[in-house]
Length: 571
Image (cartoon, rainbow, N blue to C red):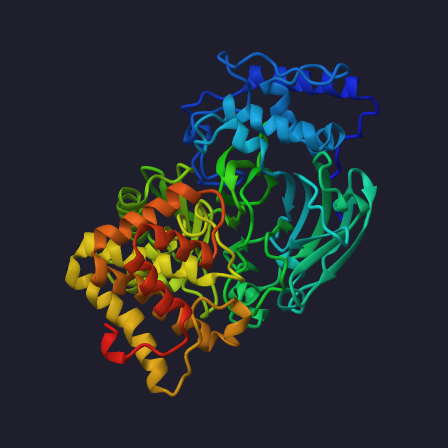
């Protein structure tokens, strides 16, 4: 692996923290004004500046007193915490417990308001510190990933990480990644499962049930496959979520990710089963980069470097474009794409429609914990018109041609809705895919009703939900309960009409039975009660029982009972 050289590890913790504090002081001197912005117009420009969240890369005059640590360690202040979260060498030396404390401290200081989350919540979650380099030709990635996480207490002393660059559909079109793994500084056994897109790590430390947080370090290097050589298998690898394109490189699921569903990736559907975590990514890149996190200059500003971070992200995706880009932005929603494929007027329309969807859904379901949504145009394969990540969604390039209330608007609304389901209200895409996909469909329907009228919403439900289910049945297709796990559908041909159509129609059927206000009130309560955590089908139905037994009965009939729905009951 040809990674960027890292600083020499300091041998003594006292010296390490002294250097950390010195660097933090330098950051305080050189930090940018919070109102400055860097526009994505040329080489090395990030797609935004520190003003996105009113925070600069140094401490603040109003920072609270330093946090006292062990007797042999200097107190941790905001400047020192910032260095620990942007320097993998310093982070490695500090260890997992100090990284978690650093993220919690920043939640109360310089990152305050970034994701509207309390420091105690941050302290209970994993922390990612990533140093990544995208090669000048955008065809290779080297990354060092540190993850501070509580030991899982697994009986077999193993941990499964989701790793899309290791998926067979990706490696068959590129190369097998170079992977090195340590736990708390010690080399450990690991296996790359290409068929399941999994990195399986084994260490006695992982068997602890009540030990202190451990520090998992994964160094990876891999070639990004040309999208034109990827076989579209109907799943995350085949969609082109991790792919080189002539005008841009898409880096979705680009580093190993903690997952609460350790099953193999299925060649249809998604793999979005990642716990909420604090993220800090320093990215060296050519051209223009946009991420799902809040972006600013790197702590040591230099050309071609962007620093992205967030306190409540399940994943962090990155798009890297050549210099020629089109950008439109309004009130925290931004669209970006290659100037060869995105006109200024289309970018404005994408922003306007995404912003409208965000505002309608905020009124219905409550505010998101992160302040911004980025829309990136990428040439996904035909299997996906769009794809969601926390703080960012992909709109397939050709889909942008059908905005203005058409298919493109429906896709945009659906992907914006995924910011609530499952980026905020989590669920397992392998075990309970009907939860987030049906709710994103229902939210799209509600947006159309608000923006274009009830007639437009009814037409949407008939065209994309009712006709899809009806066509499946009329073609001789057999129903599978939408509440099934992803693997149980057997193919994308079954998964689509069951989850995206029949599963979504359950919410509309519930409206007809008990009224929209009752159904929307229930969904809003789910978000309020379980945001930043996870639910499955059982939890949703149990919550519905407490809210309205009639609602629960509808969900059981449409989601859990595999008996076909009478076509006269389908819009």
